[in-house]
Image (cartoon, rainbow, N blue to C red; front, side, top):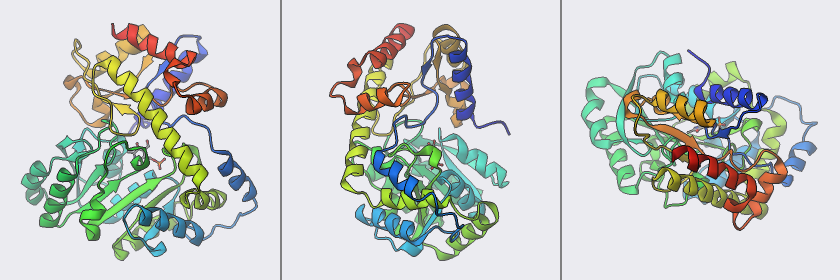
Length: 382
Ligand SMILES: Cc1ncc(COP(=O)(O)O)c(C=O)c1O
């Protein structure tokens, strides 16, 4: 197994920058915005909290995360919440605890397949509608393959789509018919610009939802994620894995995350400013590629014509134009489909001052450093 594709792309960016070559960083899906000062002080004031604490997370965090979901129409008790060092390890533990074969959308986020493989689980990739395997295809294969789990991503990475509510309802009906667990990765939920229906609202008893602070509040390096369980057995199996691997998430980070999940008005405002900036910049890049604006997150998944494979397209963009993207095959697509994953969240600037200007600007596309990136993309595509 190689280093996660997204991290490998980041290394290429660093190497080109060191060599003084132009780089348009469209590879790494980091949210690219500064930490809100309220969270900086919350974390600083908790530096003295150094006990391990409970495996599932401290009570104030579990209560705040329960409130976060309850406010979104998913009534949640603190006992249903498990916090972990990012939603990625939580997903790993959920897949390991559940076992059985896993259905994934093609394309889907790089780590699902890698994690299932680490656990020795079989995977099946199905044509998708956004981040959701097509329910008709799922229905057709579920019995024969002895599937136990289907993973969905809402909004989706890599396509930036939010799957329509009617498809979510169909998916839940198929999951019901075949007794499947739905793992709903909703880490980008608060960055959606369209109506959102979680499968947990439709089939509450068979859905585990994961979320975190990495995207909406740009706290990826804090490593804090949460999962919402309805099945106590599955939760307890996840806790056994967690107790033997990470013991508990970082204690000071948990204390600050409890502030974040309580959603004081300053942070609600920050998330909505971020959503708008992501949408404006992603939509501008989408129009350069000639594809529709995404529904959420900060990703596009265009087809690049004129190349035999996606790797040819990506290496041409990098070597000729300094444009870093990921290939569709890293997300499970066929190389010949010639799709690339474009992440637009690194275009806001290289310093926190630039990123804050972008966040607070009425017209971020006209800030010189963002306009320069857009020009580079425009001329490369021309
Ligand atoms: C779809 C998806 N799920 C999960 C994650 C991981 O998030 P975390 O930082 O909470 O581990 C990412 C990060 O890129 C992602 O794109």
